[in-house]
Amino acid sequence: MSFRTRLLISFGVVVLVPLLVFGLGIRDAMSRRITGEYELRVLALVDVIRADIARENGRIASRLAALKGSLAGDNQFRGMVLRGEDSAYVLDYATDAMRLAGLGFLQIQDDEGRVVSSGHFRNEFGRLGPAIPPGEGTDSLTLVRAAAAEGPFLALVTTDTLSIARRPFRLVGGIVVDSAFLLRLARDPELGVALALPRDSTRSDSGKLVVGPPLTLPYIDATDGPGRVEQARIEITRSVALLTALQHNVNLWFGAAVLVAALAALLLAGWLSTRISTPVEARIAIGDLARQVNHDVKNGLAPLRNVFRHLTQVARDKPDELPQVFTERQGTVESSINYLETLAANYAKLSPQTERKTTDVNAVVRETIGGSGAVKAKLADGLPAVSADALVLRRVIENLVSNAVDSLDGKNGTVTVTTEQGKGIVRIAVSDTGRGMSKAELDRAFGDFYTTKPGGTGLGLSIVRRLVLDSNGSLQVETEPGKGSTFVVEIPVQ
Image (cartoon, rainbow, N blue to C red; front, side, top):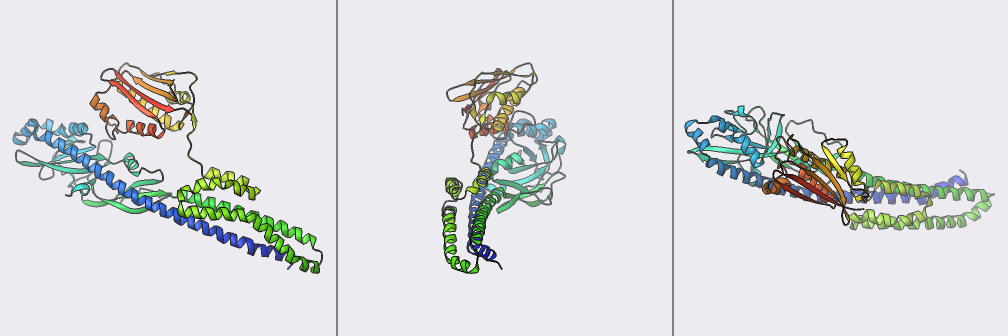
């Protein structure tokens, strides 16, 4: 074996192997720490979800209590119970009451569980409705799969009872459980909430891991009859993308350090081998050369070792500060290893800081309304750029314009989008000459699931408000019944 080969092997053992072990240790420590933080966050989220579901139960129960009081004093309904009068009124009662109460599901059942009035189908009269099991508090909630004209849907329901003319009746009411409802429960972009129903094999959680204990609810499939009580689960999932990206970044820096150390060892070994012409000179020079090589390698590795030690300490004690500290120490790494400049740029791209982008409001408005003749635009010249996400801003304008057009009810009217500059802000106003809103309607307009449109979800203005607040903006409304409404969005300039 030649001297050059032995020198290369020595450097591999002395430098590369310890560096590999050290890097793998950092990677494993970071993975364990991040996984632990995720688990704690998930447990906290489960508690939040339980509280949200309990609040939904309270809201449903209060709406049913109001319906109960109204129904008890309804003489037309009482006349049907006593004398069979006005059956059409009773058949339509649940449909109107469900809409007025802001519910997504409502049935009135008799003491045998047969449907007296349904909020979705008149012809459900006399059929057996879902038999909701008794419970208290959150335990009284049941997940029901019900049928509607547009297809089956899921509803989170609870019950209340009343007596009319000494005959017992049961109110079964609830809210629709859809993707928007589950998204509202999640509250965290890295986490998700999914429903696992009995015999449901269509759901796919590709790229997601189920974590934490699931929440269980009674489940009844009532699409073809009363159904039977089974168990459904609300599962918390998390994306593996962030953890994978962090591990990839550590591997990237570790690979770069090994590569630089290997190149330095190879260059030094090659230079030394060319300078030694005889075995005697080689043996004399080996001690000095080894000390020189060790000194040069330590000089190159010392800053890297300090950075890795610092990162290990931050990962253990203050994991949330890890990206910031990594960025602060990036200059030290670059000054020690010039070859890492390209890799450092790649790392910065893999772990970007959250920053609002420079956005042209007028351009977003033009792109949103396109060439629609029903919407007019009055755009101020020379508007400064705002600090917002263009896609978020477009979603806000689209929702407001869509609501404004709907408010015209197909009649002649105008919808106008206006932009102007204010003090440190850009103002976007969407005005219509439609039906307007009363004070009571305005007070409820931004609540989840409140809508005055048939088939509406009641989430449009709720989403608009959240998007505007997330952009550090503000939302104001000017409205008058019969004269239209104006929604004013103010976004801070760049």
